[in-house]
Image (tube, rainbow, N blue to C red; front, side):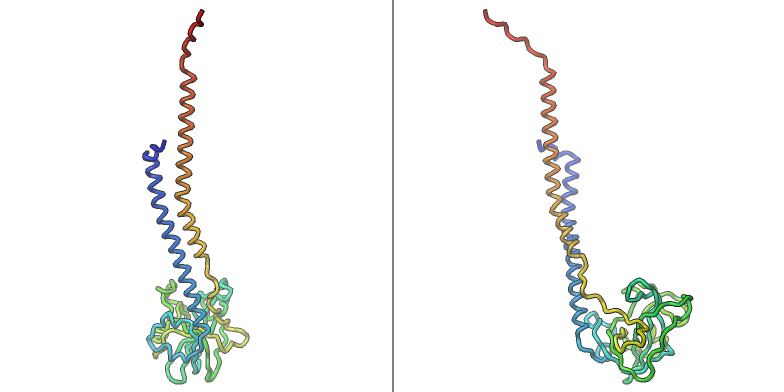
Amino acid sequence: MYRFLLSRQWVILTLVCLGLIPTMVELGFWQFHRHENRVERNQRIADALTADPVPVQRLTSPGHEVPDEDRWHPVTATGTFDGEHEVVVRRRTAADEQTIGFYVVTPLVLKDGGTVLVNRGWVAPGADQTAYPDVPAAPKGEVTVTGRLMPDETTEASGIKDLAGLPDRQVMLINSEQRAKALGREVLGGYIELTAPEPRGGKPEPVAEPDHDSIGTHMAYAVQWWLFAAGVPVGWVVLVRRERRDRLAEAAKDRGDGQAGAPRLPEPAAAD
């Protein structure tokens, strides 16, 4: 009664099941690795945020590409803000991750020489999107700032298109190389995401600390895929047993119908 497994329909179904099992197992491991990467990233962020601040020149220099291990590391810088060459970065969200506005990026001319970009925070747009927004002025005189060291933004890394023909003093990316060309002087690689001192009146709104508590749902998805993989052979066996039962029932029915329609033989005559 299992010869039906050699039929074209069942061979195809069996091959599909055999293909689904390793595919689902692999998808489960893919989600598991994403979970591991998220946990590792969270730990790296937590370690960086709790590290002691160091002078920014210790971790970066002109043309330097900030590596992952230095990202979010607290740094300090002492100098004077160059408000004349301040720019705003378009299409950035506030801490609520819903309201679209601008980041305010102001060059800080370092006391010991050189320049570093400082992301002072977020401001809301005005009624005219092409006009420069209302930005509180940067502190005057010599200041010491503390913040998180961040790598330069690029289209490849962020997915943000670097549009041309933008209004005056508006940019799409925070990129030290681009600003160095515009300023005509060397700029340290990467930029500082300001955390201190706090701006007067809370404006610009400081950039929120990166999330390092949530681990997402990758582990749940991994377990889900593995359960699906385990369920495929179980489902195949259930279907086979059901098919066998249906065929046995059909065969029994056919035998019953054949017996019912057979001619009855005459009964032998009783002996005298």
